[in-house]
Length: 269
Image 1 (cartoon, one colour):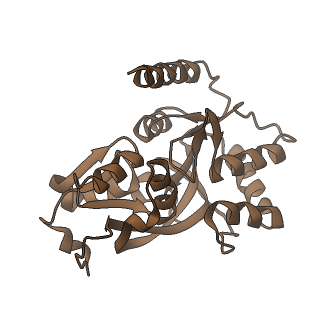
Image 2 (cartoon, rainbow, N blue to C red):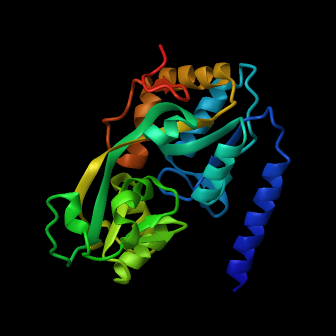
């Protein structure tokens, strides 16, 4: 109970702090989604958090006004703030047609796959997405890419939670049969709840997935371009390769980030 009240108090404090951020300062928001972004003993960490920190060091020489730190909120709340005010940077978001009418994207900053995961002991064979129909509930987290992908055809089967860790627990407790998640987040999410990657398997790969920095409407184009240029420069360094390998155990990483301005389908030149 004490932990629950502490989490609630921390959430209220974070909301009040965000309300005091000046409109012309860039607010940086993240969710608890290891290894992309999370808090360890109250300290922000994760791949995207470290990446942002490195880029801030480069941008400190410019006139870009930066938030002093990354603020953590449930994804649905962070997304709502990004939709309702200017000068917000969300780390990190997958790009879709709907979202491109709401945000400007810079990246990708990470690449993987969106997939359907099941318990290791579940021998179901899924050859196409429609095989999920009437086969059990699907765990997703609120306003995430999986919910957007599946809500049109599988709304009645969705079990929606606020955090990926909750959907992982539901799967392993057999409260849902399927768990939709990005593959690069699965090992860390399971580790956070005391489980291992070997406890689940990907039963179906829905599509390739790329994550981007997402800037809210109203953010100055010059600010977004400066982040784009800083990212492009950093991605050419051995330091960036080491950072990506540290979090994803892969030397194959994005290295040519693009800028997709809001309402623009093709990258800006």
